[in-house]
Image (cartoon, rainbow, N blue to C red):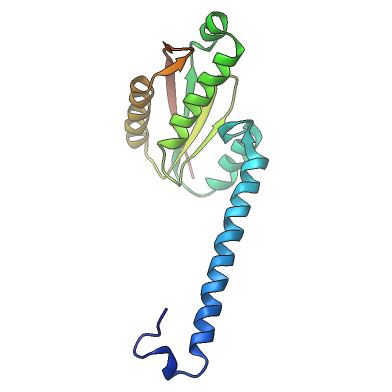
Length: 168
């Protein structure tokens, strides 16, 4: 770190101040990582990389106050078939796979949560209906091109979605 317009030695104690600032930044980064990890533990839905229902509903209420956006609902419609054909573990795996795809392909300003057995909600902050529809089309295509594999066999995930605007 240097002081613009001169070397650190030009100002008495500048080097010590810059080192202290660097140390404080590192400590802040560490604290923010710890906080994020704690939030994840408190709000995650088991081992799914999404918010549990209550946390999602709170995020929806708090995060959208005074803002526009859309709420998308994504349903894994063949979850019962996966359960009947492959069992509980495959069902859990299918949900993890879908949740990972959804959470991994949204913006930092968006939020994904599990709102039902095979249903996820996505808050698409600041999106209008046309933008949300385009985003959901891309997400659904991503699900189709990213097959879920269980015991060596591809298991299709059939998903549907709906979109509703969120008024400020």
